[in-house]
Image (cartoon, rainbow, N blue to C red; front, side, top):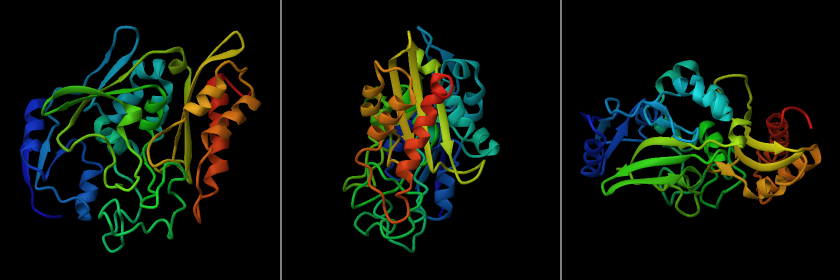
Amino acid sequence: MRNFAYEAARMPGDAVMAVAQDTGARFIAGGTTLVDLMRVNVEAPSKLVDINGLPLKGITALPGGGVRIGALARMSEVAEHPLVVQGFPAVSQALLASASPQLRNKASIGGNLLQRTRCPYFRDLALPCNKREPGTGCSAIGGENKMQAVLGTSDSCIATYAGDMAVAMVALDAVVRVRGPRGDRTVNLVDLHVVPGDTPQRETVLAPEDLILAVDLPAAPHAARSHYLKVRDRASYEFAVTSAATGLDVQGGRIRAARVALGGVGTKPWRSPEAEALLVGQAPTREAFGAAAQAALRGARGYSQNAFKIPLAQRTLIRALELAAGGPA
């Protein structure tokens, strides 16, 4: 780890300006990703701007039944909060399926949204990686790619977005509140992360000096009847091989609204409007869920070791839809 300066910010505007004035500066909150990357020299910031003292830890009710989650709220707090458990169960389930209890106690919501890929080549300085060093190549395409993406990939990068919480939040129409040097703005979470294309080093629409203030979850019947299902190689402290976040509003035996997102298979949290459109107006049956699953994975591209993810993700989604509907169809 290299030497770096340290500054503790007291107000959001101060933190934004501290990073804006130093192109090598980075925000740090829980540090559960950034410090790991600094240890292996993937990240080498000139300054760390500590934002843990900012007033961004609250979890509050919004008019209409939604909830606002401060960027510095810890994952464990959010997972157990009654407003989240009751109104947005998929978010609670996704958080409880993430990492270890120790990491959930430390990691912040804002930092979790921006966590970097776990592709092993990204963290190995001895091997090419376009995401870490643009123009050097993607070692995963012809190498170890069992855990890599099958949706949203490019010839430059197939690294999977590793998080759970963002998948659930994308499905439930979350909105990210951001402060930058020119003021505040909102970003729909589904638009926060970007596919790699030929610029895999750029993972979100945020600039380095943009500070996440909070995440808003809007209330809706499909949000209150949502579910997150994660398939992984071991029962705890493991990243998703595939996952699915689903929300259904079923009335009179028909689906009035549907939300579908996939994890473990995309280069970003993967929302499927195609699957959602097929579900609306249908009875909540296995046949309807199967058609939606086919649509959600349409266009997926498997590589040498991960083509199995395509049928596995379809089965994961079908089961998650069954659980959101209240049981096997």
